[in-house]
Image 1 (cartoon, helix red, strand yellow):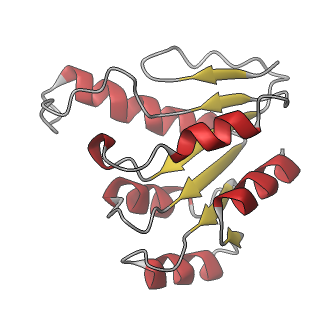
Image 2: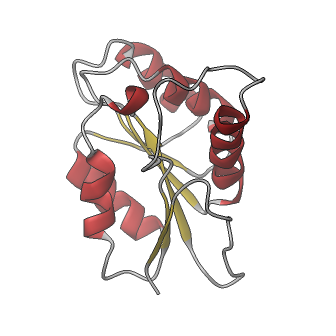
Image 3: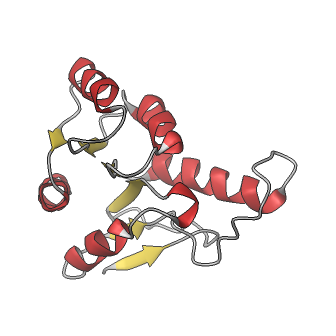
Length: 153
């Protein structure tokens, strides 16, 4: 059954369910909503989409360990990536995506990543080297990312 979980929803995923985490450019809500494209492409698929793009995000939240809603968000994202079967990672060329770069480092050795880093992303060279060093599959377009994730699942 197709489902979408977003923070702060509990990460209730059954033992037989496959899951896909959507890691990538959000930039405090300013990046394009590429996650919707992936969600739509999987509506016919038996998968739980873990989408960190929070519907009630408030850009005034302090980015601090002392701010409970911020901590809740970050911990949800980290836990979701730990339990996901596949992590589809997208670096939008118009974004900086600092958190996604951190997540690339955290999960580079997990065997779960598929990365889409188009030309124009400001740190594409770094992403390419990390992917080559850790044998992380890379694709060029969002459509290719969708196809690769479907095959992996």
